[in-house]
Structures are given as C-alpha cells and as structure tokens.
Amino acid sequence: MRIVFIGPPGAGKGTQAERLVAKYHMAHLSTGDLLRQASAAKTPLGVKAQEYMSAGKLVPDALIIDLICERLVLPDCDKGYLLDGFPRTIVQAEALDDVLARRKTPLDAVLELRVAEDELFHRLASRGRADDKPEVIHQRLETYRLQTEPLLDYYTSKGLLKSIDGCGTVDNVFARAQAALDPVA
Ligand code: B4P
Image (cartoon, rainbow, N blue to C red; front, side, top):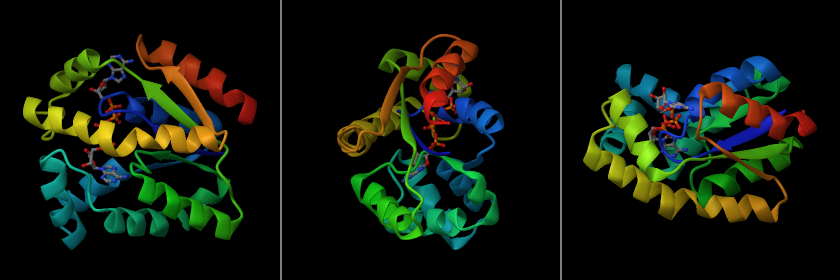
C-alpha cells in the first residue's frame, strides 16, 4: 500500500505512522526525520535545512524532492510505504505524481489527520523539540495553512482523500486510521 499522511504540525503523524507501518508492513518515510538526521550529521543539506526548520518554514521544494526521490527507489519501498510529511506543497505533490506515474505505482490513499489549533499548541509545547517554541509553532501553523492545506482539495479531486479526527487517545486515533485504510489495504 502507498499512502500519503497529511496533518498540521503536532497532529500526531509521526506517532500514528509508527503503528501504521507495523500493521500494514510499509516502509516509513518521514521527511522531518530525514532532515533531522541530515542536520545532526551536519551534511550540506542538513545545515541548510536546519535554518528553515528553526524558523518554522518549509525547506525549499527542490531539496526535499531530491531527498525523497532518492529514498523511494530503495528496495524496502517495493512492499509499499507511508509518506509522513511529504508532500507539503502543490509543487511537491506534482513532482511525486510524475515519479509515481513513471514507475506505474499510483497512491492508494491520502490520510488527513485533523486536530484543533489549541490542542496542537498544547501537544507541541509539551514535546519541547527545538522547533516547538511558541513563536515558531505560530509560524509552522501559518505555513501549514498557506502551503499544505491546498493539498486537501488537490487530493479530493483525485478521489484519494480520507480525513479522520486526530483528537482522543493514540489508540482511538489508530482505530480510526485503520477503519479508513482497511478498505484500500
Ligand atoms: P515533521 O517532523 O513532519 O513534524 P511535525 O509535523 O511537527 O509532527 P507530527 O505531526 O509528526 O507530530 P508527532 O507525532 O511528533 O516536520 C518538522 C519540520 O521539517 C517542518 O516544520 C519543516 O520545516 C520540515 N519539513 C518536513 N517535511 C517537509 C517537506 N515535505 N517540505 C518542506 N519542509 C519539510 O506528535 C506531536 C506531539 O503530540 C508528540 O509529543 C506526541 O507524543 C503527541 N501526541 C501524538 N498523538 C497524540 C494524541 N492522540 N493525544 C495527545 N498527544 C499526542
């Protein structure tokens, strides 16, 4: 199964992704994790990406598209994958469509996790990662509204979008995610 996972910062994508990849035997491709690893290793990409992440902005499309295209061709992706945090812009979504069309491997579904803003603030503030400072959280939410939310219409028009409520316990949310994905698994 090939799935895209969309949701605002702190919606719980990473948390649910771990469970979903175990249940459906998919590779887990988190652009946030890949960028943080590159940043910790101080690679040229990582150093550049960290500037954007610390400011709550998206890393430039060209960098992230190259990163994910290199990852998608590795053998563990043959069994299917969950794209966690990619695409985040229309340009990224169109680039992904091109790659998948060339490989004749279309997406099976796009899962959206919906969570109210006050709950997102609460979750991110208690997590306390470097980019979880209040002013950066505001910027990340604004970035999400402007650059990522348009993807919801994009994928609705392709008949792929499945939206679930991301509030409640991790178990509750996982049950909703399974109910959404079982029909396409
Ligand atoms: P990401 O790493 O994708 O981070 P995120 O959106 O903040 O978190 P996520 O939704 O995964 O939340 P989590 O499960 O951790 O991105 C970080 C940055 O990388 C971006 O801002 C951007 O700069 C850059 N980036 C990444 N992808 C990019 C792309 N494609 N293009 C350009 N730039 C890109 O959960 C958050 C907290 O909530 C945790 O503490 C968790 O324990 C808690 N939680 C989870 N589920 C809960 C529940 N049900 N109830 C209560 N708490 C819960």
